[in-house]
Length: 268
Length: 259
Image 1: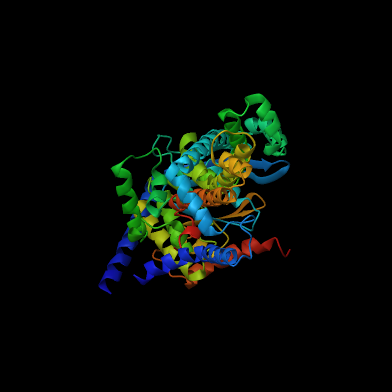
Image 2: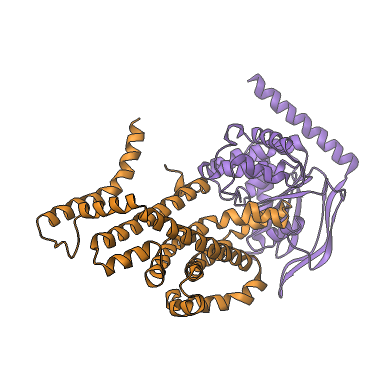
């Protein structure tokens, strides 16, 4: 019981510290400036303006086809905006790293778990250092003893944890998450949310989570951005202290606001 | 211990049917059901084997045939693999060569034997050319298919993590294509023996096929049957080797993990 209290208190203090820093510096991690993206004659994003602060956890939510995944692909540099620009704050060579995690783990089936994590250090570290860093990060996601296994013997949640380890091993400044928990069962998903929150609190990267699960968004994020027809329809801060309790009345209040926004258009 | 016995039992079961056939065949021959002019008894074939083994003729012919088969395989396989890779990786290369290759593929390569004899005579080049041509297609097609079938999501993942083109090839594309390449390899090994035997029976002055043809001239049916059995064993040996390699290289594949 004492251990649990200490952990809770630690993360509480950390959150408070984080809030103070954000308030003081307000350093920006990246900004979308009037970004428009078209595929052929279909406009997916229309004039999006979005500033995200360093270390912030932003959830992007919207119905399918609203352009939220496109937003993430632009952020990760997988696509280029049709017009407007995307500015990264840290242009120094090591800090610029943005990692993306997908709904599928995308592990190499022919590489063992440890070697899959090594992929995250491509061009960053070499030799013995790689192994050490990979094992460290695997321990953090709770898979220290699985580094010599093939991915095919892991469960869906474990594979996604390997993918998370691979994304984090190179210490990215921004982690983009494209519905990474969407394919998991409800209980595994809650475990993964807690793991994600714990790691985000300790590593202090900027997290952008695309999801269609409103409860997940309010449970994890500092701020929820709702996208509708390619535009930002709602930008809502979630000033709830961590650790947060699933389905608490406070979270339910924010959840309601987001759902109202999402369904407003549907029934005029 | 019992698991080891089980695994021996599993591999032994495949040999049960050939052994039974052999016994039945011997009994039928001894009882006079099968005339010795049509099919000699296994014991007679065994005797022929022993005689040829002692004279050194058999081993020499096996050696020559194996050498021809492997060199033809090396040449055809290397070209097929190289072109398969090139066409799988480069749309330009594929556009340039694929149509031509598909046209040539539709000619049965054994139909080229008369032409090949005119070009190369009955020397080693003729056999090498035919085997290489036969082996080329399965290797080429399966390498190409394997590369085209690599999961594009994994390739995208590799790019995101900053892999260079060569890293992407070694760590993502080649291992992804390997299962398909092995299918090609096993096909090619079968075609390798088939082509060589046909080529040797038609135009050769040494080798297993030649041995069989000579034996036919002198009505030595036991030697003819012996040659056929040796083809079967060599083919099985090649396939076993390929499967062993496959098992070694594809340990990660769920299909090879239940052992």
